[in-house]
Image (cartoon, rainbow, N blue to C red; front, side, top):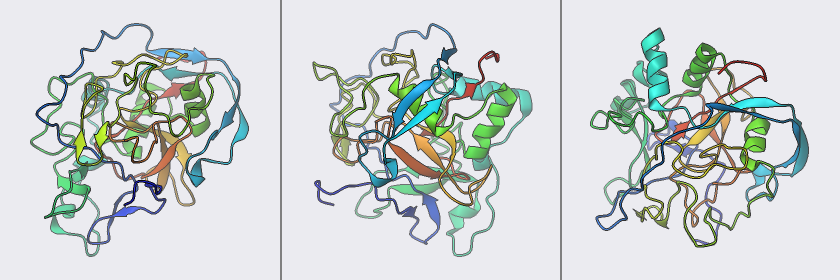
Length: 319
């Protein structure tokens, strides 16, 4: 596709059989042998949640894509929000306490015309396209939160990585157990903006010296991620500087669920919901969705290996 045309069309990505896998058309690339070494991440410190004051802000400012606008003034009451994305360790404690099984671990409902592998528990995983298979997203049997890219992939030793491969229902289940909730889209965008001007759609998240300030995709998308930010996949939470509200990874790393339905038919376990923030798969030459105003839609019943969550609670609530 020509570089000067908008990528990220609103129409969904479909499996070769016509079965809807995901509306997310972001992608990752294999690590190259000469990429920079992974950066060292500082230890996590500070509170697990912060209280944000209520206020007004312009939601959908500087829209790059039609679904982001029009800009409008929105009021948000004070609320509390997690300082970082939910981690593998957080989710493991929930599973140990409740015995919960995610949607990806359950046998999928039968789908007419679906390939055989989609009758097995699994989830959507990005794979670099090649001449034999041009698909970016594929159903991988055995892909789930403990094995984000499939059975050969493990989260062992990655307790601090953001948990992924959790569907909307899974995120809601954790939120209820923790006494929290998924943020509304307005809460999420207000928190990400942190009182700062809207980020230009043309600006990558770098400092004045050109150093990446978030985990996103640098290089020739989708063939090669240079890993200049120190990562070519998910980064441990809190590796990059927080925003003015003290919140980490509000852009990049993994997309985050919100409670916002994408349209008619969205409910607790079905339909589509808005996700925010972009991910490590988002490239400057591809979609520029590592902006607070950016939004995308994800099927409620489907996880992916670049979608996670952070939670909110009312002021005065524990957590």
